[in-house]
Length: 261
Image (tube, rainbow, N blue to C red; front, side):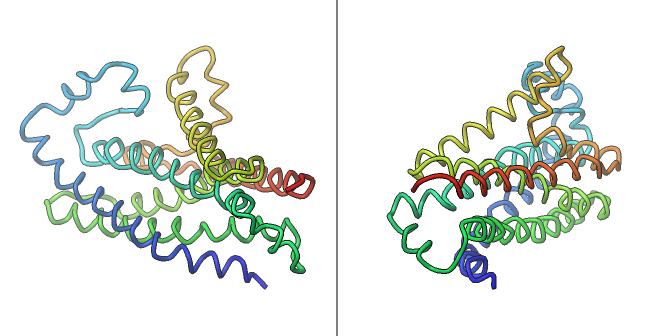
């Protein structure tokens, strides 16, 4: 059981380590840069200097505290945008790459269902998702202590736990693209485009009469500001993301089962 999940998980370990190192360096740099910014300028004036579309796009509430600064510089940019796009891109090759390279017929000649193949390979994405969310919060907390700032360890840990269903939902978008297109490069571009478009829809339409359109975007249900600034954990939003991931997974399975390859 779970041979495909174990095999794909092992292949993803090295890349996951590099990803965790990269995001940890980004976290350490963001924490290290905060004192320089806060001492050199009024952080509220810095926030007000941004154009309104950028404030809405990055959901900037305040940059006058380390929590607010990290929400923008690390979590809005690093987690919601970079990691969301990375997981969508990675998932887009789960099925399409084997079809593109002519390996899928060989895989399906074994006693394995298409549903199992897609599900186990999707589950292997848990390796980068979990590893980056284990390593980075440690770096954030240690770095904050080194510069003499205090962060709530509970809030930081909760934020990373709540990011797990968000990242799986982004990966679900990539999986659906992967079973839809035969060429991995096309599936990857579509996954990136759709994920980023959903981010723009949610951020730019927030507070307008078309705000309800953003309900389709995973980004609506993961808010770093609420966790770090207010200590509020949106468990209902996390549940919506779990449901969204399940819908995307089941839709991908159904399409993969009935399509020709």
